[in-house]
Each structure stands twice: as C-alpha cells, then as structure tokens.
Image 1 (cartoon, protein in one colour):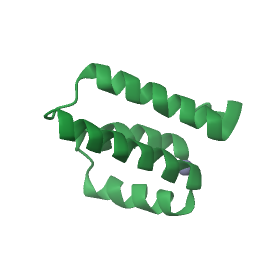
Image 2: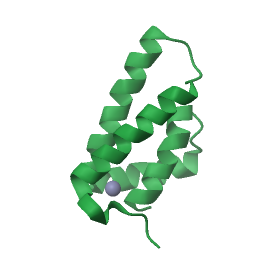
Image 3: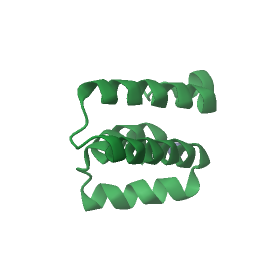
Image 4: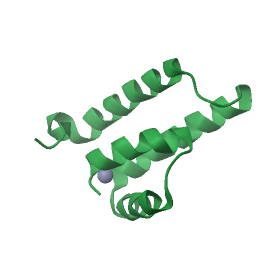
Length: 86
Ligand SMILES: [Zn+2]
C-alpha cells in the first residue's frame, strides 16, 4: 500500500467498513510513514469529536470537509508530488 492507496482506504475507514485485509496493509503502511500517521491521527480525533456530538452515519457534508482537510494535509506534507500515480 502506498500513500495514495491509504488515502482511498481512509474513506472506508471513516465509514467503519474497512475489511481486515485492508486493515493489515493499512497498519503496515502507517508503521513506516510518519505523514500518514499524522493524517490518520487527525481523522481519529475528528471522528471521535463527531461521534460525541452526533450519531452515525456521517453525512456527506462531513465527508467533503474531511477530504478537504486530507488534501490540504497531503499537500502540506508532500507538496506537488502528492498527485496520484499516473
Ligand atoms: Zn504514507
């Protein structure tokens, strides 16, 4: 799994629908990728805050905002090289 794949897997992660196989790869990538650790940590905090205030499932608006945050974080960390592999 690379950073781009992890970002995609995060969508499922946020939905609580990560299958165990992906979870393993997810954790393996995270263990060796500090920028991804920062992003996932940030998302965990956001989800926790949201869960405390509102019931699941997450609304589309939340997803959109989350993706904006992710994109900003990625550009912060990786700059223009954050483009997905062609
Ligand atoms: Zn990464």
